[in-house]
Image (cartoon, rainbow, N blue to C red; front, side):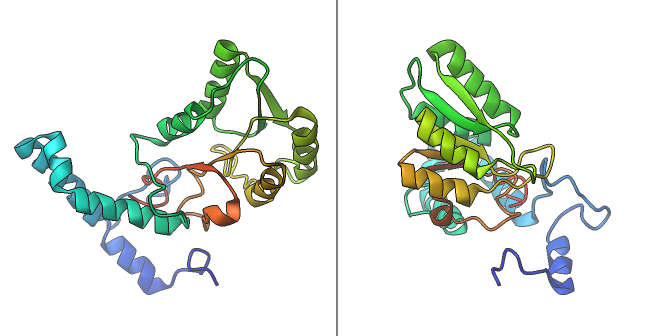
Length: 226
């Protein structure tokens, strides 16, 4: 069984609570917003801020370049991503925007997405539609509530999108989209694939090789508790 799907034991839960300030006095359930960070994370952030105060921002980053490189490698292992493929930015919305910026969208280009999505991503699509004439195609939902893979297959063939973009777990519903199935369709059609994994990373097993995505955006402050 994958460690991410194996039920936690009582000793494991007790250890996680013991390492988390605040968990001794409350049960924090809003991990979809922002989780309580372990003491080690808080201490590392505080230590780096103190170093910036003493040396300056760029100098502190240079002094801790080995630790920063190790953090990138650790994230790559968690995601099953190739070494050197990780970029850390200020938040997941910025990461998603950077992925979109990799495309030179023009009038008539199509982005294929879903009806259940994260609002910030949809706002970016609408901005591209207004500024660059991009057409937004939203695949219909299937009987189970998630995106209909058969409809995605048809729309890829008919609409020839330059990008397929999907939110794995939309914020408001808890829906889990069939991202691996969509990834197979994108690979078969050689269409770039962007996945928003903010609510999935740390809550579901993530392996970018299995997802078949070209870009994955996520955050550490939710279920990864970083």
